[in-house]
Each structure stands twice: as structure tokens, then as C-alpha cells.
Image 1 (cartoon, helix red, strand yellow):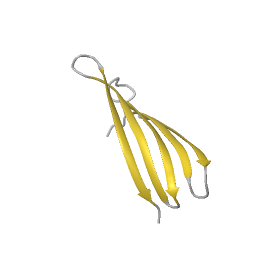
Image 2 (cartoon, helix red, strand yellow):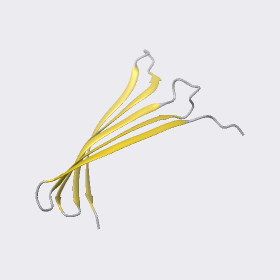
Image 3 (cartoon, helix red, strand yellow):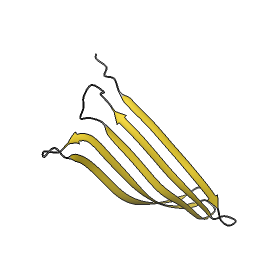
Length: 94
């Protein structure tokens, strides 16, 4: 059995503001760096997420957010590969 070295870093943060009795806005962000084999130069990625958590009522969240992934691997032309996704999350807490 052989084991490869892996490198992973996760950073996140949150900033909150209460406008009215139950109306909250929260900025959320996250950054992950993942490299499963630090000896290879084409297998890692960086994940970034930024969003706004809007709480119009108690236990209800609407969270528009963007997720960006940058990969170490290059495409056939030698360009960096990246993904950008826009999402909206609806959540209710019981």
C-alpha cells in the first residue's frame, strides 16, 4: 500500500446585520484549496464561494451565491480550466 501526500486548506467567514425584528442579511464566503498529490502539478483545485443569506422570516433563508473553481490542470490548448456557477438556495429550518 502506498500513501500520497495531500494538501487541503479551508477558510470561511461570515458577516451579519439585523435590519428589523426578524430580517437578517449575512454575507458568507468560503475558500478551499485542495491538492491530493503535492508532487503532481495538475491535480489540485481552488474553490471560492460568496453569497448573501437573506432571512425574510424566522427560519427561512434565501441565499443567492456564486461558486468559482479553478483547476491546476490545463486544457488541450494549455489554458487554465475554470468553472463559475450562479445558484440560489432556499432553506427552511425546523
